[in-house]
Length: 319
View: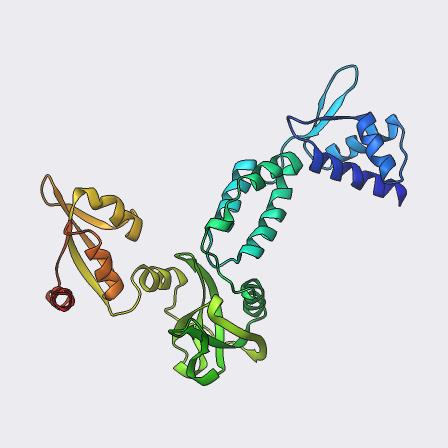
């Protein structure tokens, strides 16, 4: 047991305290072990390091009069962990407290020195963050329900004009068959079938759910024609409304915006030296019309006629 503890402590020390810019000698490792009430001679420590290398740990040795060792590669690079840290700190649905806890854990993946660099770059305080401390719990519970093929129940709330949380439908308990978790536009959603809606596929925001429980009853299967990717494309790209194939006349400068919204596979056609036409499938809604209006005249709806009429009616309301 003592030898096993010694091996684990050496691994922990190399992982936490060394990298390509910070190496350690066998003497330094021995001093660390002594603080943990373990003793080891030079030969024993060298053998432990060899064992760690043999089982796959990328530990490098700088040969000199006093060999120096450091952990070289890790499962995650500094750049990869930086991307994850940035995603956490920029996510509105993760509370400030939980963001700091997650970033603290992520920083341990690259060792103490690089982890400290990541933590010094934080600026969470300037971001608008959620105050729903139950969200991580909701994610965990829903994921468990999906794996166990079980339904969930919950209450759902909105905010009133006084910024107070008010349960929808007088505190009605929703019974729901979760199919997938989706992160979109800085919000986390669960997609699934609702018992009270004849198993229609619906979505709910996790940060608006409360009193969530996993039920014993088996969840309802998704409709045969259901696809998470199709649901995401149609439901989240332009929320609400009926799906229509819409033709848009766009100035060339809007190509980036169109690709960002509909992907590189979007159907486009060059009209002249200054314009192109995009043909897209969207849910015709206020959100879609708002996106068109945001172009400030650089985009125009060509058809179909009923969509053009709805758009003109919307504009008329603001005149």
